[in-house]
Length: 426
Image 1 (tube, rainbow, N blue to C red):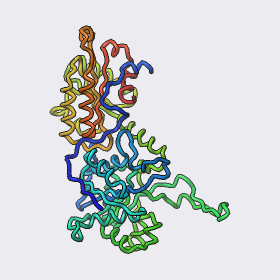
Image 2 (cartoon, helix red, strand yellow):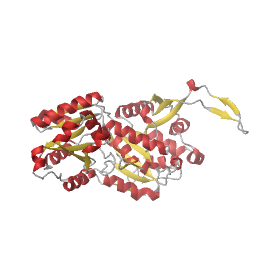
Image 3 (spheres, one colour):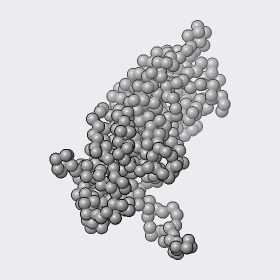
Image 4 (cartoon, helix red, strand yellow):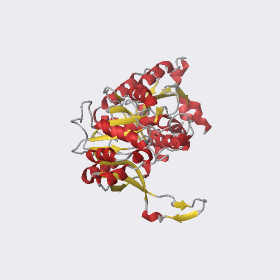
């Protein structure tokens, strides 16, 4: 069984952030104390993401690839990591038969492109084989657009960067196969049948085999066509199949620490922490050219420096400032008294049109500052309902929108350092 999702317009990079985006945060809480790298290849590259595991080791009822991280399934982050790479043409996600509808729904909700969903098998190798074969068939035999190189990657390793994918793809093209490795962090030992130490391996001589792995399409397809039922049932290493059945010795490339795999429940918390840290690294504060907003942005910039974070005050995102739309940054739209959401709406529209290829979620914060004069006439209620409606729509486009409202007197009284921390770490 196979499902192809119709191609949709790719929007800005994904949702993330704690629950209930769109509501106004309580300003009193503070008182409690780039675009993808420029790589390219001249051969077609596709991806197979095996995602049929049950996630028994997490101890959760939901398979880990479908567990929610900041409001978004883990596998969606992994798909996005490949979608943002312009030279990857096609992504095959292999899931258990009972998860087909769920996977199709995830593709629809998060507007993923280039994704084909294929039914998996009873073991890891059977599932990967199904994905590899799907890349080479069009229903009437061998597909004319089958890839030159196939990258195989775990659906639960969301933090893979384009630079490393480029290394794997080009090495696979040259050598027929390539794979990521990492140093062993523990000594490997063998035990006797009675449970005593037999011998240990010299750790310096060995490496851990990781993902991604890349193969010439002909190599990996022939390896699966030639391998045995025992391989299908008990094997786990694709590089070994390429060597044993095609004589292709893989080029091994040491990968970055970010290639780690979500295995246990605690790893889901680690994923959330990594994403939050990425979210808080930099931001643009849009002042609308107003002097009062510019003064506020200047104070925020100093606070951000104390937190080793980057903040760029800009009047708007037009003309030369439009380059900020393509940076891996969040946005704070400052409004003084103006409770109209038109500025925020224009910013979100500009982000959608710019279509930044970001790996991590994008957050837009509307900061509404009410002056004393405005507060005195009683019209200080922020348009929370309208903001929440806009946030719901923005989330479909993979942007999370939040609002934070302050009275001018509160802003003066608050430590700008604490205020800035609240906006990005609450």
